[in-house]
Image 1 (cartoon, rainbow, N blue to C red):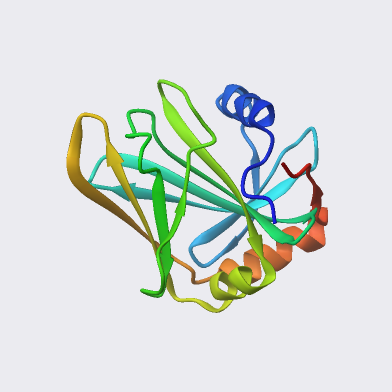
Image 2: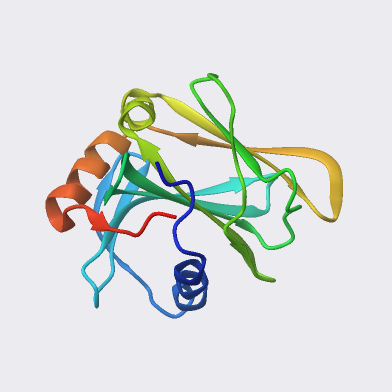
Length: 170
């Protein structure tokens, strides 16, 4: 299973994300299906507000890469505390920890692969939580809650529109 996609790709994603505005092509409850006009790549995306001001974005898409069935990209504020990374839980289950792929001043990116077993938890789950820390206040544990209502339909929509992405695992 791959845990992190190529770091160079991550830097390109961060550099171009602010320039390219993907088009929303569908909405499934709390999830939007966004597609890149140039590449045709799509993702199921939800934007969150945490602590009243932090903007967090979570995007999922099917992939073809070893044991991974899905890719997940999460962006958090750029002043994130790099260690201990983030943790994610689905429906109050086990916390899974992930390191940041790349950080810039404006935001940090986590890219990870989900096995079929973990993807099933997302597809059938109700809620998730992302836990993180900020450099400015390293002792304050922050939590961003997200709804999984509509994720299954949005993920299926992405797979139908764009198929699985081919990514390189490392």
